[in-house]
Length: 239
Image (cartoon, rainbow, N blue to C red):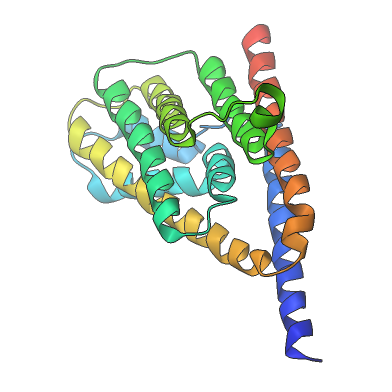
């Protein structure tokens, strides 16, 4: 078997892994809230008092790595970004927005209806997929500012998390250090998730199948976003 055949096999496997990843995320949206916290973690947040830096770093990282809404949005954001400089700018904008509203929301007790904010987060996923598909240029002849949109939707993602944390009545004792530690964990988790995506994307982009399946992949991202919106709006109306 030639090296070209080996390379094609690797890129094909990477494409299938990404497709399976998206399918799992879409299916997960049917039975999980975007910012749900595991029961054990929920109990810990409710009961812990004082400064607990390492546990909150762990919780933040775990939330980001398992937060399919964040991962879908980031996947859409970097889908057509090839230079590390550009990736760094967009990821930093998302992190800035996410961190700002998460920290301020919890500190000042500013929350939103969990179903509404998670539906907006689902909308962010749909928006990014449509942007990648060139829909706004095609439909309206206008290209939204992608950096501004990434920052703004980052604000909403942060509000989603702050809303969930507020529901668990986190102790005011050690609140600021614990929140900062949680945020550090979120950024660590984001880097881990981003690294995994970039490795898979790097293999896939070397294959002709990337061009062939880019449209399908973004339709899958958009579908997952619509599923999340529908799930949250259904919860809003039946709650």
